[in-house]
Image 1 (cartoon, rainbow, N blue to C red):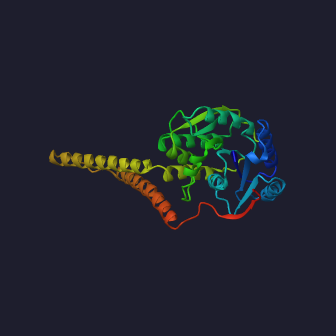
Image 2: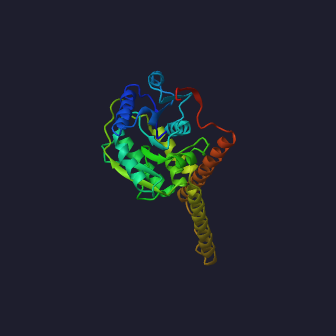
Image 3: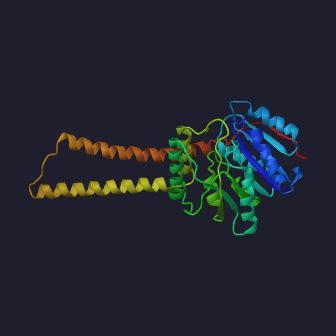
Length: 313
């Protein structure tokens, strides 16, 4: 098997057929037959009839595999399930809404196979107009991956990429319940390339990412693949300890030289609130890490598969 195309699906009944059709047309443009590639469709507990459509496509084509989740586990978990079901030498990811044009995969594939220094080549989207929420989410995500995950600034990880088999096998060794693709790629290889593509407008519907989900992705990346927040918390604690020591020395000096004054209620309460807020913030960061550890110890699943339709031979 030459190629595996993994597509996470969520409420994509109106767009998925066109995306699958594009995969077939793109493969045919380079004379690849159905025996040369497979399509893995992972339904992330869609609220519409997406899973029925996936199973219809599985019955129609022998090289399509359908996976159905028992609940919504998120895009990253859907990709992980698709990776584990794939058999191709090269793994390609795609979006179910048609925004990332499938035929652009050849740009990434050609860069990957022509230059041995890359293990994965990701699409770098040209600028498209975003909503204020998406713009905020994109900025927060970039801050996280470049400053907390320490992804090189000249690299732009995305969920539309072409990767070598060995890298995907390494990524799927991660079994904890909080996968983040950018973190998994960055910790597995430094040989990451980019190719500029022209991202399309959404064909139908709207993004499934709410503010809650965007914050969840951000928090997941921060706590699952970086200990920098703990170091920042330690630094904040050190700063407050130094300020407290300087304050004590100041009061001692005032006492010695007879200049001790009694601060008012407002200044006292302000200091208490400031220090108390910092302490609660630090405890919250520590608590988030402890909570993640607790969930991992209790074997919270990365995903639960409700059903699979696989007619591959």
